[in-house]
Image (cartoon, rainbow, N blue to C red; front, top):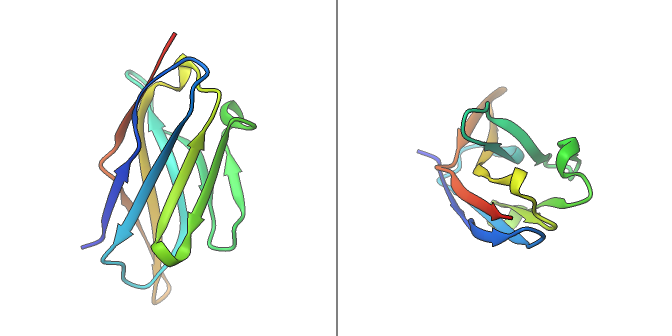
Length: 119
């Protein structure tokens, strides 16, 4: 069973920075896209940023210019560098990994890590 272990969440003041990491293990097949989603109380889960195996990135408009997604393929790890954090960024952040094997794609989610930005 694929395992995703997230780390790096916490409490930070308005304008601060955090770096999230998500390491995947027990991988079968190859990793396609890796990314981060977030869910605030009372809101739907939304895409924050993702990155393909080719290095193409995609960001939500609300985080462009502040967040940077990257990956280390040798470590099967995806990162999210979050700068200039705002209270509106407060949410549980989930990593998502898309695997590809024999023509099929499989999505796996991390357990979530809390990010709280105080004003």
